[in-house]
Image 1 (cartoon, helix red, strand yellow):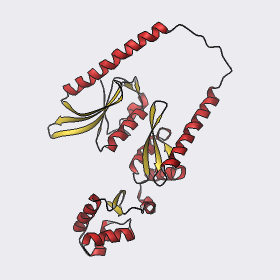
Image 2 (cartoon, helix red, strand yellow):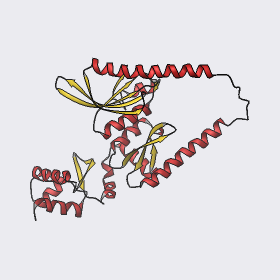
Image 3 (cartoon, helix red, strand yellow):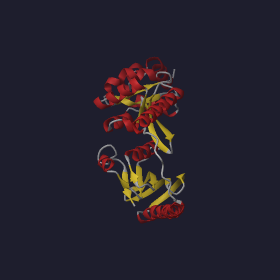
Length: 285
C-alpha cells in the first residue's frame, strides 16, 4: 500500500488525528507526513480543522465532523463560551451578542457557520451550529425575528391616534432629485479615491444601485500589489452591522477589507475599529 493510501486509511479509522500521530503510525518523519497530508487535502480526500491542539491542526474525513467536539477543550476561554452558547441555542444572531462573543464566533470556524440573512431590506449575520441543517436554522431564524416583532409591538402599542396628513408632494419630489444627485456624486468620489491612491479595479458588483457597490481592487505598494475586497456604502450612519457584514464578505473571499463611505461612523463602532474591527481599513470620503 502506498504511503498516501496508508495515511488516508489511518485518518478514516482514527480521525480527527494529529500529524505527529500519523507519522508515528506510518513510521515516517513529520515533514514528509505533513507533505503527504497536504496532497490529500488538495485533492479533498481529507479535511483539516481550524482548531489546533498545541500548534497543530487535526485531520479528519467526511462524516467525522461530530468528533471535533472531543477537542473543544483546546479552545481559549472566550471561544469556549461562544462554542457553548452556540451549542445550546443552535442559532445565534450576531448583533445580539456582546463584542467579545462576536469575535470568538468568527474564530471557532469548525463549529460556527455564518449565514447572511436579508430581512426588511437589511442584511444581518447569523451563526448556526455546524451540525444542524439549513431548514432547522431557517426555522430558528424566523422564530427569532417573530419574537422581536412581538416585543416591538408590545412596547410601541398605543391607543388609536388620528394621523395628521400634510401635503408632501413637493418635498417628496425635491428629496428624490437630491438623492439622485447624492448617489451620482458618491460613485464619483469613490472613483476619485481610487485614482488618488493608485487603486486598480479588478471586479465590480452592484448591490444597491449607486448606493452600495462591492469591488475587488488592487493596491500598488512598495512591496508589490495587494488585493482587497472593497465595500462602498452611501449611508449617513455606519454601524457595527455594516462593518460585520462587509468583513464576512471579505473573509469569504480570503481578502482583507477596505470600507469606503460618504457617511460617518457611530461613536460605539468607531471605538471597535481598535478592537473587534482592527483589521479593517476604514475611510470616509
